[in-house]
Length: 197
Image (cartoon, rainbow, N blue to C red; front, side, top):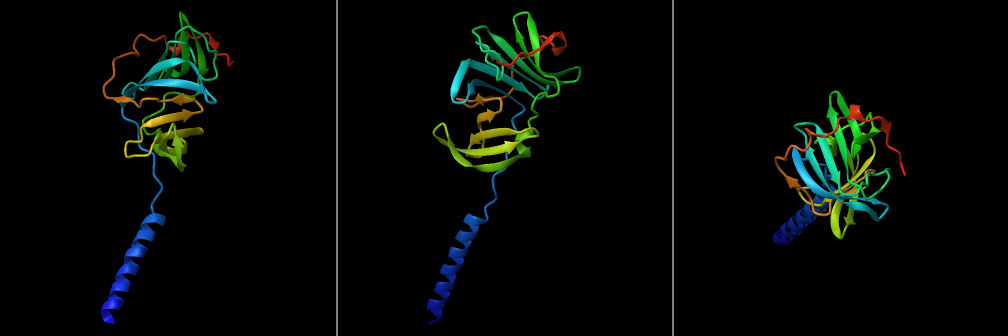
């Protein structure tokens, strides 16, 4: 009788441990971005890809991100067949988000700059869901309202971020990046506000 009772108690302890592990597991938290990366991105409106894929360079050591579009397709902007560069900067005296096309530029935002690497850590877990056929973690927040979807693994590679409507179809390449920022037209050269389409 004693051996049977001990076995039942052991089985009960195992079952309680399993239930506790399943129901008390903490929600995932966002992890900070690497200091520098580049990625091929696409811009979507709804589920429709607009423009052509672009290459985005991110470097927190210079507090800037520049995205080079072969067909200008910045969210909220006019889509055309001409190339453009969207710049996000938190550099003092060169703060904001602007789009350079040819020999001119326009300001998208003068009160929002570059996203610091820590911004995913400020987001709230929403749920798990399938994104582009794979399991993803959905976070929301990040200062102003962003929806951010990452791979459901320890790396949390970006898949999609909105409201920018940027999709990372192939992840990112992490590490030191070429200097694509030094020769970019500064925001002070922009004489107009970008017109939304």
